[in-house]
Length: 363
Figure (cartoon, rainbow, N blue to C red):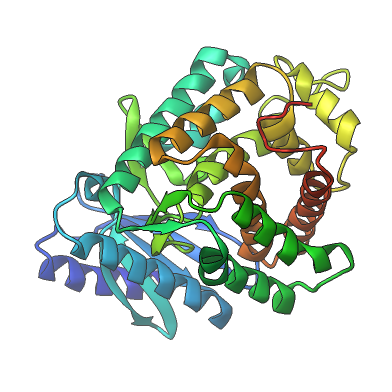
């Protein structure tokens, strides 16, 4: 299979005026029903040249098609500075019976390399620099891909939010607490009626593992399987903050039941209770509703970008809940889906009760 991909990649490389592929390594594989395998292909100089992503099963092919279509749309839209940091899609075709997406490789090391360096996530300056780098690229990306605006209200709810809830009902279910979710989100849309929201291109999974860094800046953004050419700008902002907070206990394992540099993490766990088998929930609640320097950094990050977008910070209570609905649908893996579903339940119930008016209200 690898030799077949290499041979086909060489033909495609020649057609695009690229050097020949001489070697490759496996850099990612997963085992979910929609699993993919990713190969990084190198030229003779040892520099990454192409990336090949293939679906292990038919269930993974839709995501490859989405990624290919999204990248093609972004590249075909005309000159933009951000395309320098995007993989360029070269082909989506069957090779030895498997659907394969071939794209150019982008330079840089994943932000996770910095994140998991001992002591990194407890250093306020280093963490602030990560948020600044990721936020600067996202601001530029959203500015360059802006394609209009929508106005919060009932019409916007019907067009942009209800379809996601309808999909949620079909794919996930609709328990007693979820029966009020639709009305709750509709009422939040009405609360902020008249607010104009930019429509931009969306990555869909703008997390620490998909952001590449080099020379103190974002040099690449990969994995566009959840991307779309036009959407609301909040999911990428929230995904970055969520992914950064989710793994704090892995990057800095707790000692004596606390994370070094993050005393608020343990307080959030004690306040909300742990989610068995999914510690991400504690990190996310700490990030958005906790106390301490890190939640304050997250809140400043959100407030600054909401201000850039011309949206009042209080509206984050709406967009966070819509984001959590999207995260429940993002993966079918049971631990991930059930964890986000439980997190959505907690946030929605307390928001509806008035105990949590917005993520700006600290514990």
